[in-house]
Length: 450
Image: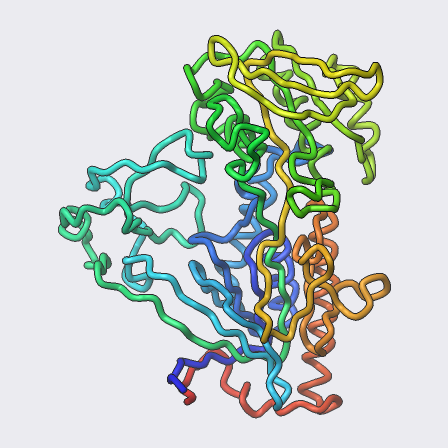
């Protein structure tokens, strides 16, 4: 068996979104050593990429950034960014073993000081996924302005090895031959907050398979609405014009067995209403329409939020959109079944936003100690009474890893999972449960096993 570096902590938190940040802070504030593993180059998850949150319309960055900074500066939390969880299992000695793949940044994290000189020197521009691919960034760059950590990442698919980034780096941090590494984290407990992923528009043939220019995803609309977005205002991608008519198509993939997603993605109705309300402020003369099957305003003040949107003049059409096609002058023709008045109808819009179905952010391998439900999200032995507890003692989960939920519920559930994990750790250290804690005596020191 190959030798791996082994790091020891009280608890490993997998996922650096809003739920993972909350769980890590709660555990660290109680004195436990925490390893926070995040697959992206920065912590913050989906929330740091949003414009505002519903139903208060508060700034998403203003909520997330302080938590990101608190995690980064906490002396009991160790960040492992750009690292993917490969497996999570409980060993015979009772410890939780997380096998983690550290992806190559081609930049030495210990040496990089975030000066961005490499980014300024790089001559290659590439699509920027953090701006919905509407803008460009350099082939080597820090992901976004408030990313944590402030460490550059080189994209090997676009790098032409010109050497400019290497020559200007004052610390010699650029490493062209960096390789992926596998290491192991052993902990007394684990909290899984791996969040969700989104159905690709390329998998939706009836909605253009991503080839209709002015059909975008809801996350792309978030970037258009953000004050630090790609255009600093809302413009349609094809020609840079302000759209006069915008449509939101709900349940694209959700509640649709043809996509293998039988469940409701839960948050789509409310974020579509939020985006429509923000659009009505950004484009006061635009006609805004939401095509929906059912409006599911389930949370506190959500129904009032929905009623406010209707009062603002946003049109709600109860319909099932059958397909989209390219119209004249880069418009989008929407073919839908009107569920109130009957019959198949068409409408033309300048810009169409798809509420794509939500999928699990991470599906555990077969050999993992975790189990999943019918929807492939994580599930424990008692999802009604103890939703955060997984089937194996010492492993907990929270947020959208357990199924789609909004930000408020994700934060509350993360704190619940953190408290359960803290209670388990205290019991383990006190010898109240059958667990060998000798291996965790030197927290975070590392080591080698074979």
